[in-house]
Amino acid sequence: LSGIDATSLRVAYMASSLCAAAALLATIVGVRETLPREARVRFRLRRSNPLGFVRLFRKGRTLCLLATILALQARATQNSARNSRLRAILGARISRRAICRRSAPSAQGLHDGEGDMWQVFSADVRGWGVAQNAKYGAAIGVATTVGGLITGRSVRLLGNRLHTLAWTLSTALSNLMFMSPSTRVAMGSVVFAGAEDCMQAAANARLVQAGSALGMRKGQLAADYGNLLACVRVAGLYLFGKLCAVGMKAGVPQLPYVICMGLQLLAAALIFLIPSTEWLDSGGPDEDDE
Image (cartoon, rainbow, N blue to C red; front, side):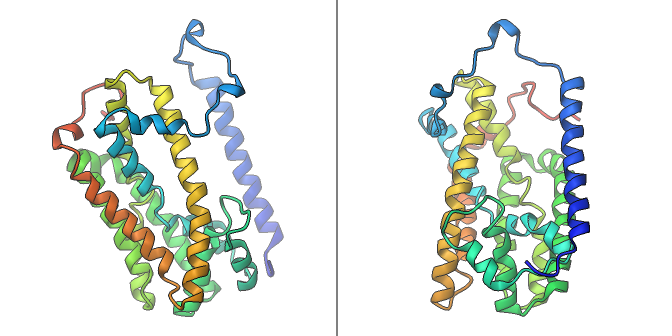
């Protein structure tokens, strides 16, 4: 790393730490535990199963398809821009050699590798510099924030099935546009990238309702879902680095983005395998009635 404003970076991380501490305090003070004390069980590490999400694929066709759709959606790659948003906004000058090392399939953290790869791709394909990367990273931040704010209205307006389909296709389109050598087209992908953060909202809600109908506890469903996403993201991070290395060596730097776009299209196709009646809300307490 070179040219980083250490004071700005320190202030940013301090602000993030304070926000996390405030959230923890608010949870301790203002959130009531919903599980009765007599129903709680002691945590035992030996009972923890790192592949516990597999049960989601064994509980019937609908639950299996929903879990598959959510897993495919988890590989939307423009989160690479979100992971690098802080560095882009602060104008961090990251050497391409350092980025490529961190993007290789060696041991890498969740926010490394893929998180910086979009800058290398943009520099190679479009000749972007720090200023353009900063504008793109900041625009992604605005777009995903707006996307989160309109998610509830989108679900109510379109319904669970159409919302999931439209927002998944929007994510695929954002990947397609980001691959373009045209700066205007790539910048235009920001509009569609706003769907990435919340395209899983309706499918996740349906997963909980479908699992509950089969007798699964909501806590177990939440744990299995989180376990699934964690495994997919860790494995996907390794594969993304592999694809980047292969693509650049073969002269096709777009390869990882093409693959990830294809995964979103596959997720969209699987939506049609679930009957429309299975996408209807059951009217349970998990609905967003606001």
